[in-house]
Structure formats: structure tokens, C-alpha cells
Length: 393
Image (cartoon, rainbow, N blue to C red; front, side, top):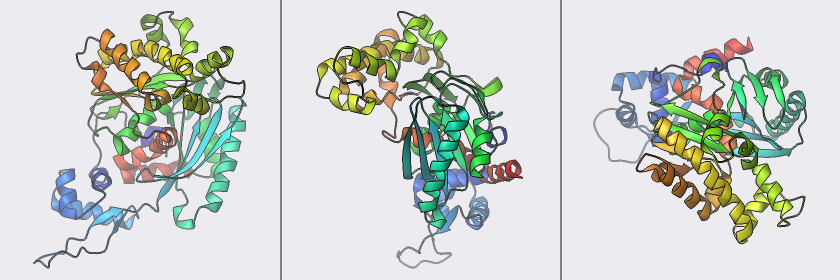
């Protein structure tokens, strides 16, 4: 699907078909009457749209319920046809994750590929090879119909480019076109921060119409936000860098930006003799649960990032600010440091309560990458299908 055609950059709402599909996603399984209520559409509109969506293979009818007989048409429940899946690829600083995710957001299969910092072409080729292996072992009905890709840095979905990635040292890499050629799948590319907002709206804690922001804290530090449910893109769609925010908010300014990454925390743990040179961040987090010296490193970072969280809350006033720092989920002391710091520095009275973790601990990156292609599907399924066909023509 094309980044320009598949993503709405306006404040327009989803189509009637999108509203129906979202209602079924929310309800899980429901008769047309419940779908109409949830989607706020007329019964006639829902009947027409469910007929189209069923014919397209996105919805399916379940066996009729055993409720007592009644006059009129039986209430046959509809559900998503989760045989429909998409492929998902996330490029991180040291690992590429390749997954199969169904249209309800469930991760069906995943493979992690450690890497150094090779070229964009090399990483794209390795991801495509891994995906080919996953597709080969995936039963025919579950083979993906599209590919969603996410990564950090300045990402332009319209052009399909990663303009720059601070850790991979990519400059102007045509990631979308590379993977589309290598996999034969219509491909959508976006930044992982914007993709996380979309994933939370579809499958997580956010309402479709909510205002929200994401503070991504990993080896890349960036952010994204939505207003009235629509994620902000802007000219070139490359917003999200936190350098100027860190420079003005965090003691030490730009010089501190590189010291707040996952890699920097791991490097300090090694330098202090707390772990060996071959330690990994997941292993460091496990050790932090029982070793206060390691835990203090994550708490120190959280205190610094709380300055940024407070600045984002004061600037954007989101209903929720989602923190993707993996330590936020694993370590109560880190959550407390974020919330206490935000409360102390923000002018918003309930700033601490607005900070939440991801709805997908352990699978946030796979879910977010899938959301780059699933969001257009749930926004306007037939337009998304048309855009995919147009790109692959």
C-alpha cells in the first residue's frame, strides 16, 4: 500500500466500511444490530458494508447462536476473518524483527535477526530472506497479503525513504521499494513512533478519536502524536526528532541525547563492571530486577527522560503519553521515576497519571510495524486495497 494513498494525513474520519471493520474488531463477534450501534451507522448501511466486507474475505459469519427463536431475521454474528495476515518488519539498531500478524493484531510468528550496522540493502535482503522462510512454513490461508515496515529516525512514508537513522547510519535509503521488490508484497513504511500510535488505537489502550503521544525510548529516541485520533505527519512526514526538546529540557542538552539510549545504559553497566562485554539489554533488565546498582542506571535515565515527558505533556496536552522504554514495563522504580519527574516538572496537574506503558510488552515493535499497513485497512479497506493494487501494477 502506498504511504501517500494508504494513510490519511487529514482530519477526515474513516469510511463506512472502516467503521464497520473497527466495530467488529472492538466487539470481537457481534450481530449486525450491535455493529450498527457501535459504528453509529444505520442498519441498512451496516448490511450493505458487511456484505461487501464478507465478499472481500475480511469478515465471516459464525454459526448462529442458540438463543430462543424469534420473529425476523436470525442474529448471525460476524467476526474478523483472522486467516488474513500481514508481514511485519522492524529495523532496530542491532536487531531486525520479522513477523506474521493477523488483522486482529495477534502475532502469529516472529523471528529476530541480530545484525551489526550493514547497509540498507543488506538488511532489506536479510529481512526478505527471513520472511520467505516464515511464509514457507506458514499454512496457505495465513500467508500475508501485504508488508508493513517501521524503523526509527526521519522516515518519509510518501517517498518510502528513511532519510536518516542515527544508529544504522542510513541516508536516503529507499526501504519501501527495496522490500517491495524483494518480497513481491505491497509495502508500507512509517516511523516506529507513529506506528505505535496507530497500533495502540487499533489494538491497545487508545480510543480512535483520542489525542495521544508516544515517547520512544530505545537506541533511538523520538516521538509522535495524534490529535482527534489522526496521527500528525506534516510536510515530508519526517517529524519526531527529539534533539531540540532534549537540548532545552534535559540537563546537559544535546550532549546528553546519546547518553540516554539503551546502548548507552548497557555500555555504562559494562564500564562499571556490573555485566560482561557480551551482555544484552534483555539480560540487563532481568539483572536489574535483583541488582539495585543496575536498576539505578535505568532509574537515572528515567529521571532525565521525565524532563522530555513533561515538555511533551505541556506542549501537546495529550490524554495519554505512551512510554516505550522497556524498563518502564519491567521495573516499578523506573515507572515511579518517570511519573514523579513528570509531576514535578509539568504544569498539568495530572501529568503523572497520563504516563502509561505500551499495551504490547514484548511485541510492541512487531505490532507497530504491522499497524503501518493495518491502519489504512481499518480506515478505508477498499481504498487501501485499491492503493495496494495500484502500487503493484
